[in-house]
Length: 346
Image 1 (cartoon, one colour):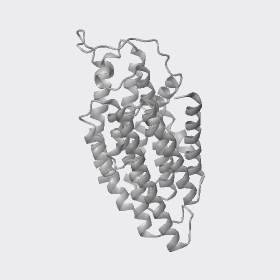
Image 2 (cartoon, rainbow, N blue to C red):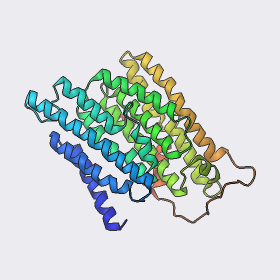
Image 3 (tube, rainbow, N blue to C red):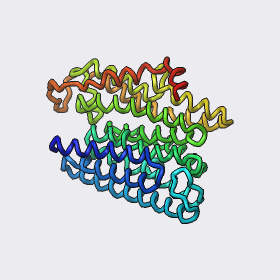
Image 4 (cartoon, rainbow, N blue to C red):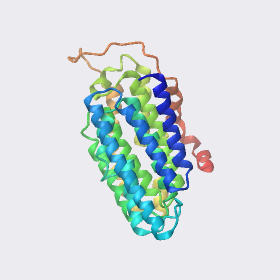
């Protein structure tokens, strides 16, 4: 792909995201989402591998369906109330349709099946965009309409996402699929609190983006696509693998790392809302996710092959490490002591 094409697609992604976030009219929000979808498809399919083409096709069909549902929801609401403003969603069937459309776009359970497959067919850099930047516009719409959405449906999908995200990631050997199920689980944590404290959802999304970016960029530096590759990459980049292990434990939510902060605050907020049972259940379900994060951490640093491996090892090339990795890793590990300051800013 030529540099000019990459620049055009990157600018289109930025334009689509900005348009959706800044809009207060349904049509402009929809147009921003469509620009995003059309800009990311060439990035998914750029390798011309059959799996990449399949991933791009699946992504297009799912996102087109969700966009059509969203447009239908906003049109129905405008028909009944005469309002095209995003915050003026009052028609109950429209609220139900919009909740479903946003769940499809984000990949919340039970509409999550496309997400691991699309990530598996994409490169690590494109998978990073799909897991972070492409989730920002739907999350912004979710925040703007959080007071109008169907709370029972949101709660059910959030609980299912936390459970399935942890459960289905247990048996995976591909790193992109593991991170896809991790994303589904984290989206469940964000969704369960959105009706009570939308700012906390946004904070969780920011910290999740920070940690996921660090992990994807670290894996991209060593071209780690499978657990078996992760085991043998220690000899090439020992320092990077050590920080990768710590970042994975942070994403799991272990104290005293950054990832503990959003989970702690969400559990505290649910307890304040007299939902202690829910807080206990999601804490227990997060142990499923902790298992596969620990397995990744174990493979990245603790498991050293005692003998020469039977598989053909990659050449140890002098690939330059991304300069963003040290900064992102430090932020992914050391933000917990700054939590009082973070809470005052949000």
